[in-house]
Length: 299
Image (tube, rainbow, N blue to C red; front, top):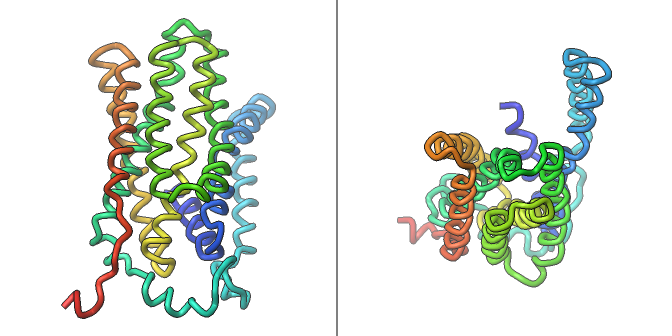
């Protein structure tokens, strides 16, 4: 419950502050997720080794509490400081609010929302199945545990670069929905690498490529939701949308665990993850920009 709110709130607030370069702003902010893996994991290890589990948890709680206090410095909307969002044209603001802002109920009634929800769900199933099984798959392929443990770091490194690259560079070339297709398709294709060649170089290369393409689609969804449905109800809309990750966190590990119990092989889980990602790439072709119904149309 506690982990659910920071990401949703951060993305919602950033979306309000940026009209231009919104995807890049969200990409930079959400890069904190993979960066945390590179920073917090060794920090936690050092705290445990130096002070023991109990004191390490206390110190981590203190650090997190201090970080939360910085939230008091954040302004929810640019209007709170008599400012405009970056790239916002004041002359078009009234018209934009009238034509673009959807209520949460209106957004939930549109098929594109649920297609994106399905894409988010299947995408994170792929991600979580890989994260849960990659280490054991590598060890089972004859790679030493110490070397196999380095693959998640390469996923993190690829993720940091991918978020900035896709949200800052590629979005100037391709539409955000098309970026979803590219990232999902190439993310699925990267899994073929370790299914074909299970060696140290392929493990690390896969980790980087998988993280690179996975991180490309993550910041696109709040960007697309803001573009489709406006910012007025984005917090509620993205809050419901984010439950797709929660459901994936339940189904992905359960599916992979069931497959291992049935087959005693981690390879089948990776094949399912690859299939889920290819299916998601297909789903993105059906996502269309919604047209808001007028009062006459709704009656």
